[in-house]
Image: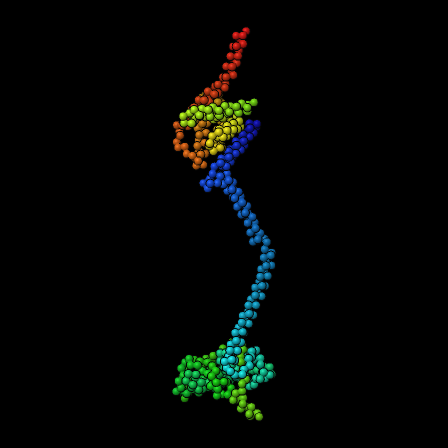
Length: 282
Length: 169
């Protein structure tokens, strides 16, 4: 037993002395980088320890942050969702405001271009049934509106006032099957009557079979109906058919997208029809 | 008392080593007196004493030279420790085993010493087999003689003292 302890003691002593010699040598010998081996080895060992400790701490932190400490993440997620929803709503509002501003600017530009006295109105309702293509605007007799006043948009003629009330008015769109307007081919001045087809197309009637009309020709108001001012765009010729009689059957694609109307101008300048009706009433 | 004797032996060995080295043509001595002392202490006193003697002697020897301090000390330490183990495990009382121990110890010392230098890329010794063998043989011879002297010297002194006493009577 004593011999074993003696041997162990000698072994430990030998180990300690050898380590001491190695340290001594390392302190004197430079490595290939010029740094003493002791310093290089010490730094290398401690850097590995630092790396191991750092890896362990990172693993613990990641585990905590990724799996355990997620209570605040749910709260933060809820807050972010709310903020995102609010931002989306605000974005939609701003986009709507921008569109509205753009529409109003176009309307203002049209008013200045027309030179007619007009009243701007906003669409506040549509027809109750699909058979009648009408709209309701937010201006009425208080604003000077009267029946048979033309309603125009930046794209072209929209329709006419049919039933005005004090603060609103019903507008018969040009595509209504009961609507009609004097029209002509802009290029050749060939005249006819545009009537609503009940769908999204117009029909140009009473155009002579010998008139020069081709697909794509612009159709504008002729002004002979006493309602719509002359020269306003109605649409473009989409197709031409021979009906066998003295007239052609011409389908016109409206210039106005009636489903997208938001603001319109009502022409309040008295027209021939108004003057005539005023004279009759007087 | 024993430690003082070891230190004295180391000092004497260093003195002989440096003194003889100065008179050698190439500045080197075939016999390593310090290594002989280390092996002797290891064989007679055990591994602990052997390695401590090797450490002290090796460091002192390197301090007096221009080598890297620690390499020779480590070699002496290892040799002293191994010699101590051999001394405690085997009966090394005759000249031949002693010669072998000194010879092998010198070879081990050379291997460790030159190996460390080569590993650390500090110096390459080539293939010094003959030099190492010569030094090992010289160290072994010196070690055996040293053992004989140390073992026989007390008896000789005693006999001469008895002879003087007899003449006086």
